[in-house]
Amino acid sequence: MESLTITELIEKANENLLKQNPSAEYIRRHKRAWKLFSYYALKHRITSFNTELVACFLKEEFGIEYAKDKLNGNISTHDFEAFVRPLLMLSIVQTGGANIRISKFDRTEDAECFKEIMKNYEELCQKRNNHKSTINAKLWTIRPFLLHLAQSGITDIAQMKAEHIHQYTIFIAARALKSMNQKMCHLRAFIEFLYEQKYISTDLSKCVLKAQKPRSRLAKTWTKEEVERILGVIERGTSVGKRDYAVFMLVTQLGLRTGDIVNMTFDNLLWAECKIRFIQDKTGKPQELPLTAPVGEAIIDYLKYGRPKDDCSKYVFVRHSPPFGKVKNFWYVMQKYLRDAHVPVCTEKPHGFHTFRFTLATRLLDEEIPIETISAILGHSSSDTTKIYLRADINKLRQCALNPEAVYG
Image (cartoon, rainbow, N blue to C red; front, top):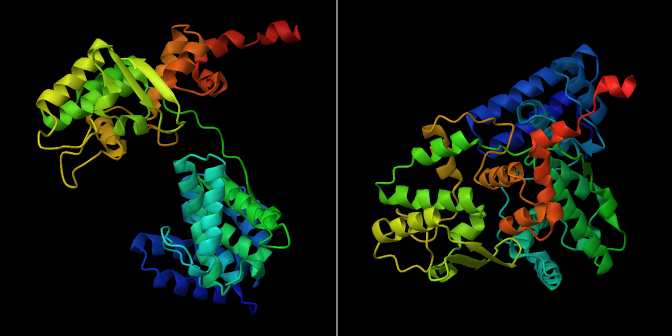
């Protein structure tokens, strides 16, 4: 591609941006970042775009650490969207990616010329006993990559070069900062597959940029009072309220995952034995938990007086408005009750439905329940997985603290 000045690069990037019909706010944010970057380059009498200039601009003007050889996972969401993403778009144009679609790729259709490769890769994942959700996550990354190659005029995978991988990596960074590590792992594994199966003659997996490991974020844990406030605002006199209350009881009292709740069928409820028995959606392993009286009463109340009578679905929890059928998730339900209960939320920490599992685990730790028992309750394959919850046990961590005077005395 011919060398463009920064001004020409911005003009071309703006043309590409407008073709995607983005929101006015999205356009405004990009134009502002480009304008500030243009002023910075002009001040330093630089006309050619390069990643070193981007790094200096971000560092000097906004204190943002940006490494050219790594995609930084420690940049805040605001800084990334306001400054880093627009400059990554300039990199996309500069490296010849002007035709990369900035809007969402079609993630359900395969590029015609690569359908056989996708089929073989999916079959390999199945042979490796990858969970269905894991395979879908891999394909969610790989399909757009192959579409990108097709858009770049590549019809034979052997023609793929390092710059094509680099262009797509930049594109992904401009769209999915928080999931960069996972997406880069999926892309790297796919390219290794291409090399191992001799689709390509050179192992280009090393060309996939490494995303810096994001800062570890402890999930939000709710106090006993906050959990009671959330449960207290659910209108149990309505059919939807009865459903939501039963669902919240399952996760707060038994720690079930969202997937196991939405997939729960009537066969999983063993009333005579006072147990819940099911195959875990995430691990594929069987799990059995006691059907305690409070949880059982909440489910019975929903089934008798809340669940639509004409719904013949095998699933216990269903939608009460079109489209009817199995509930998909409870994210928006969770956010609604958080607002209704006026429970403060830190947006920098995960605060979805899964946090109730985290809360249950920390509560059991506080009660000095053995880690092996907690692992069995949560359905973890190994107690090592459960140990991540130990980070939230502040009281136990305080007991491990050293007295500075004793150490240095």
